[in-house]
Image 1 (tube, rainbow, N blue to C red):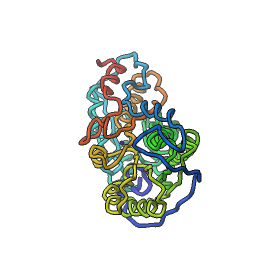
Image 2 (cartoon, helix red, strand yellow; image 1 turned 30 degrees about the vertical axis):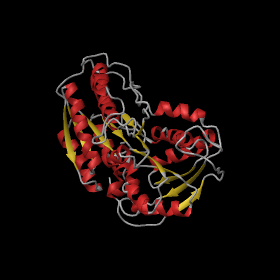
Image 3 (cartoon, one colour; image 1 turned 60 degrees about the horizontal axis):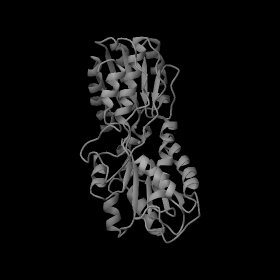
Image 4 (cartoon, helix red, strand yellow; image 1 turned 90 degrees about the vertical axis):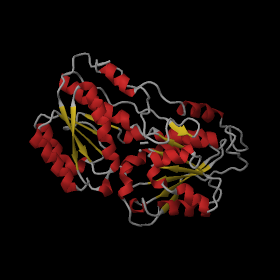
Length: 379
């Protein structure tokens, strides 16, 4: 899925770098509970009517075929442009560079990736390199603006347009386009709530494994809580706050410990699949065989879990869509046409039945390149 500058403050999809131990906080979000649900039979329950959630889940598990950006550029886009991509220093950011390179070829453009190790010094040095190279545009992801505000102003003042993604920031003040921010991520909360309501038959006890040190994720936590209360009055939701330092070390231990002390909880929602890496094996070792887990922004390990039935579901992160949309914004700016508003992120819940691939990441929208080629007049 998808769902990252100092590695300890980056977007949640870069949490694999965080490895120190810390404590956990559990806060109750709801206290209503029911019994008698057979999770294998969505919609049938002694605790509530999940028929609406079942119908809505069918929509979420259908792969989207359209994209919300539909206005063609309408003018010939100049070829031969060079875009600088600042790699924020993690393997996930590294995977975004090739996506941009593929998209840029459609335009006849070149992407120059500036690699960093994610430390503030190297991130800032990358922006200094941008000023020396003077590309036609800049794309960066997963770095809080507060760390690079001066650099953004300097590059924007040099007349170089900037597109960004994947933090709790907004467009403006030097950034022409911002993709996948906090408000966009918030759409995932209702989707997770629908999955819990539908698969529990309207009476599931769930826990949300949150990473509150990432502000962008608070959008999921709040909309999940409100949407589950609306869709599933017979459900309950508690929140397990995982310290940033637990990721990659003992996050799964904390989740298992919670489940052992709350035996009625059979549903786990992960703020990001990175906190659940290794969880299927931990659950098996603990003898917890009836837990259903839904994640967010899966990497290939989680896709394997889903393919083999070790994890029930996950929401695909629109990584490809973000990269194409940022490049689209720069293309419009360079061409002299209005930049379009940020796209409406498509939500796609994958399960063992509808998983497009278990070995590689993929766009949410299967014909994404063709869609943008048409928008750019390159089809």
